[in-house]
Length: 183
Image 1: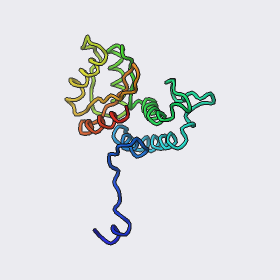
Image 2: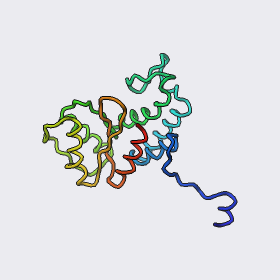
Image 3: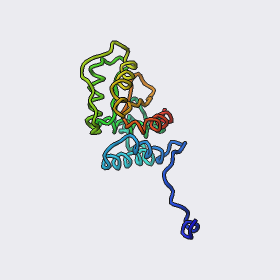
Image 4: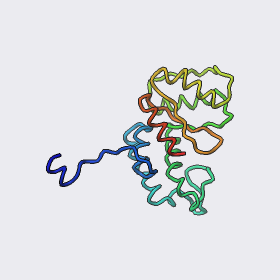
């Protein structure tokens, strides 16, 4: 170790952390969002969610980004998670489908993510499966997304809908671990 490293310590690289703090969310953003400009904007939004969560609630205490039933101050701990989700949904880099969604709508939602992220991936628009929504999502992922080097990853938001994004296959395991911590 050199003199400067001994005096000032080594430059710390962000590592996978166990607590759900701003650093954790920045790791999530770096692995699921595309566009450096959007990542910076999203990180700033998350900084506000941690430092001034009331910013995301209206005068009557309702969450202002979406109708999720979050209330201030009771749901402050959920604020960063839903700021992340709702901002990603707004730019099309994540989607939310109902538990009983038709395959056509699921496919449309997946195609929108592919477009928003600029991935070179073609998803069929024709219905192929007569399955439940979760099985359709899984089948499209297994048969139409993963063979091309990507993976559809679901974030559990404790509701009757599926929130998901698509990431390159080399990020699949890390994103899955990060999403599991966001439950």
